[in-house]
Amino acid sequence: MAIWNLGSINIDHVYRLDHLPAPGETVGSVEYSLGPGGKGANQSVAAARAGAHVVHIGALAAQGDDWVLDRLQEDGVDVTHIARLPHSATGHAIILVDSAAENAIIVHAGANRRLTEQQLAGALSGIGPDDILLIQNETNLQVEAAQLARKAGARVIYSCAPFDVQAAQAMMEHVSVLAVNAHEAAQLAEAIPGDLPVPAMLITKGAEGAEYRDLQSGRAVHQKAFPVTPVDTTGAGDCFAGYFAAELDAGRDLAEALRHAAAASAIKVTRRGAVDAIPEAAEVLDFLAGQDRAG
Ligand SMILES: Nc1ncnc2c1ncn2[C@@H]1O[C@H](COP(=O)(O)OP(=O)(O)O)[C@@H](O)[C@H]1O
Ligand SMILES: [Mg+2]
Image (cartoon, rainbow, N blue to C red):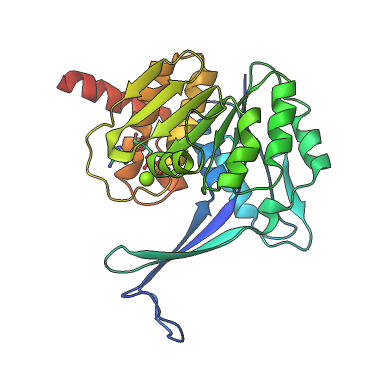
């Protein structure tokens, strides 16, 4: 049993500013921080901290940025299938945050979107029927990966984020679970009315919790969000998806997997940052025990 993740790896550069620059304006930064990010890396770290064996499939620039791999490895993520590509930059995001917490973000996909089919096929040659493949929209080769995984009998959980209706349409027939947040679900419903041609959907709804819908049986499992005071919701959905997959991989039922994922994301939103804010399994268990005691 393992989680495979075809996922982006970004370096997030976060600049805190008094105000966001207007065209032609230069604004000094009051604070700067650097850390690993990208939806793929976030989901891999979440699944690994949840206790799963995680194999990340992705790419970085040919040179430098070794610290990013080190960070993933510190969490136990298998980085063997992270390629180093010449003539590409490591994916990165320039995140500007002003004093009112408004942001402006530039993302450069770089190596994340330059994986080759050969690399993908080589990496996924080891996936089996008890495994889960995670996919998001920040790499290339999503459809090819989903097809390879399904052929091997694995489950595919696809997060349609950042939202892209064409990507969703291309992926639907190849996924086991389509994961979206409420905003993405509304955009999908507008673009494609009626039931979507996927076996199941995972819909996260921020402070309203989450819902797993089995579209074949019509059964839905609901999970309330845990009441916390959020300070930074960056990566909440990634934390949820990674934990959810890891808990299913560990053999938990849907209700338990949703509960653990909701607890992990509740802890995540109380902390600043993406990867760094994702809790370890022990913290999640403590949090749930505290919730049970509180009644
Ligand atoms: N304010 C909050 N309080 C408690 N839990 C939250 C809060 N915001 C998000 N979460 C948890 O994180 C999950 C994912 O958040 P959501 O906003 O739906 O995803 P995304 O990050 O993709 O926008 C939610 O289903 C919930 O469990
Ligand atoms: Mg949200």
